Amino acid sequence: EPEVTQTPSHQVTQMGQEVILRCVPISNHLYFYWYRQILGQKVEFLVSFYNNEISEKSEIFDDQFSVERPDGSNFTLKIRSTKLEDSAMYFCASSEALNSPLEQYFGPGTRLTVT
Amino acid sequence: KQEVTQIPAALSVPEGENLVLNCSFTDSAIYNLQWFRQDPGKGLTSLLLIQSSQREQTSGRLNASLDKSSGRSTLYIAASQPGDSATYLCAVRSNTDKLIFGTGTRLQVFP
Image (tube, rainbow over all chains, first blue to last red; front, side, top):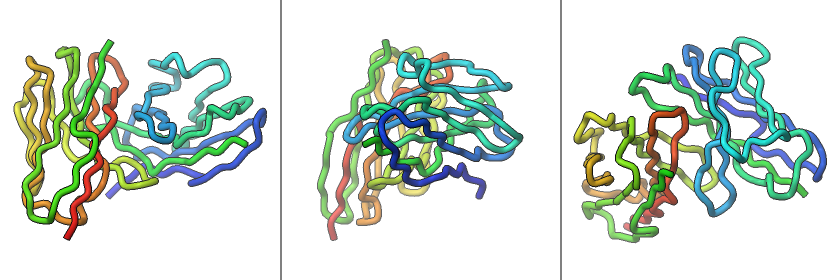
């Protein structure tokens, strides 16, 4: 069964460093998402992406964050200058079409630890 | 602003019991609702999706119902097993891209 994959599974970085989290969505999916979950808290939406542009972003997704689909398979989240409060599990998700009933499928997550 | 609440926050039951997990949302104008399972330190596995026009969905021992007008969904787990132990999350999608998640119900089923 097709699945969303994410790398790395765990990333440790120092405050102020740039990190890139990578995702490979399901191959025929058109819509891509990033969510995050701070330990013990709710899963929160960050951004959605369609047709090579951001379709929606939350107030969390400030200028320190960017997303890119550099080729036909990868979808990346970049945090330009990490802060301690960016430590969280980051989930990538994809769905086949926005205006269809189909689910969002989530990857296993990347645990980001900022020290 | 849509808010999603799940009760109970935690549940511990012996194997074999039938369970009901509750999810409520404040804005009834939803597009769909998904139930997920999350194992500790792991990703989210989609269990069931209910469209706004549907009343329920079933998959194996799982049955999810939706009462949009009252802002409620329930996840019914029949004949629970220790392997069902996990956190169960509900998430609603309104007329935008994003899913809004509840805080989850942490379920433990003991032998």
